[in-house]
Image 1 (tube, rainbow, N blue to C red):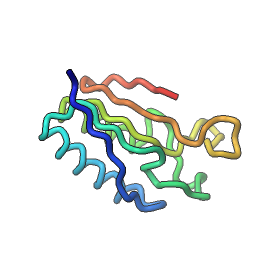
Image 2 (image 1 turned 30 degrees about the vertical axis):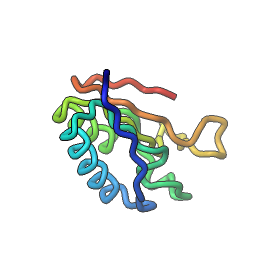
Image 3 (image 1 turned 180 degrees about the vertical axis):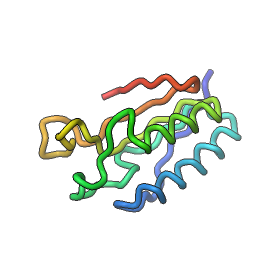
Length: 116
């Protein structure tokens, strides 16, 4: 059996570093209680924002993905979360045919797996 932590927290729109700090604290706490998969809500990074040009990041090479990847390896757990994605010149949002947020799941050994 795997312990899962389901997380809904008050992310602050357009405050990526603040939200990442919150997520890191939550992941470390959940892992301390034995969770091996920590799942955050959709859009937990930057929340829903009209400023995708400024805040969207490439997946999986963006700084937020890399930070969560390192954290997952450190606590030996899966971490999944939603974020605004920069895909070349395209920013994913509801105006696109694709979904705005891609769920990301990072394995404890650092391999990434993208799930739509």
